[in-house]
Image 1 (cartoon, one colour):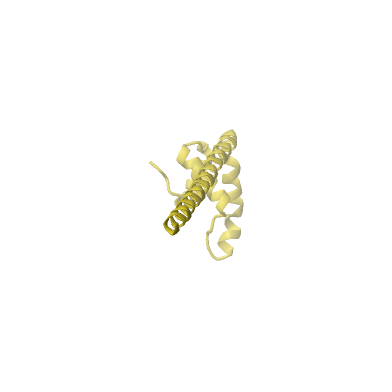
Image 2 (image 1 turned 90 degrees about the vertical axis):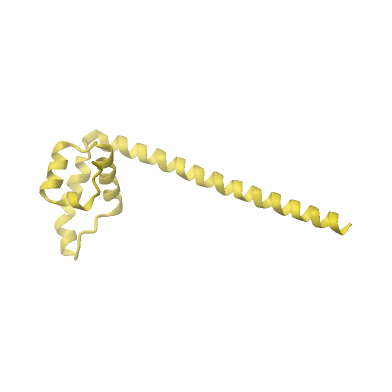
Length: 111
């Protein structure tokens, strides 16, 4: 009788643990799917103007950021510019401006 009860408890615990792991897996997968959808939406928006708006925003912030003691690019702007560079959707004028001001050095360029 005790062995049967212990076996039932172990099976129930294993089932519960498995169910929890599967739920966590589903949440991680959903988060990845939402991140991919968000990234593709951002790419579509960035492609409209060849990332020029983000480049202009970064250039307008450069003096203020340097006066603050360093060049720390805000995460959202940096992420979008990196995405533009990685996908090759940055306009020629935006890329030229980034190279002229040497801001291109702040971002990894995939050749």
